[in-house]
Image 1 (cartoon, helix red, strand yellow):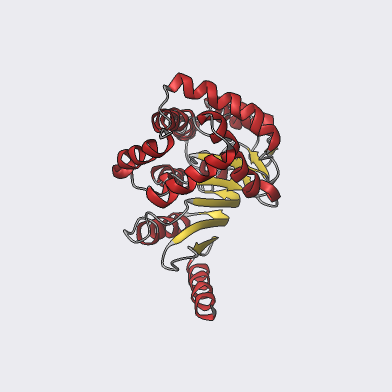
Image 2: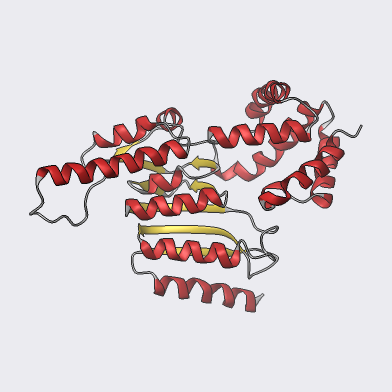
Length: 304
């Protein structure tokens, strides 16, 4: 245990001393300290941040010994930084299918919101705020036409990025109306309106089709059953309290699974345990293995 703690501490220290603008903390998997299950980004977003995250995902997440073990979670606590680097990090996280969290005591402001948008599921319990992007260093000799062109290019880049991440383009438009020196804090309802939290539409469609297949249903049948189960189980086990998030999330899974499949919660737990033992946890598998995992899960869930 002491060796694990010392290795973990050494990992954190080496990363903190190599990054000048931000702290990027990596949390090893409980079963294998060489594999990284969770990332925490703190401070200013810079090129060093991108390099650190990209490197650890390549070496300690997508490594063959790690890819089926690790959870893919990143916690954000940042005032922002480089727009270009935030977009690069966001693209890396979406490609590698990360869940993104802003914890209760944390904040995600300015360009950090671009990273929040990238999650395949996104939760914001802390503070989220937006404003207009600005140039950190601009040559004062540039003409107004040149500045307008640069601003137009940045605005288009952000708008296209949000569109790719299934976030409303209205968010990029509204960001333009807020002066760089100010921050507009977003309410939960505003984040929902912008589609900044929750599951992106494209991910939802893919997951809906996959779950329908695994449960032996059509997509329409699964959506109807899922919504019915959500209305019942969501009230029993809400996910708006971070302190009870993990506990309620697990209970909600069994509650909804029992209603979707038409079986008891005890039987749902049994089948889910068998799925994990036999097929593995679906999100931890590379895309090339998903069909095999779906077939394995379908056999267990539709078996009477």
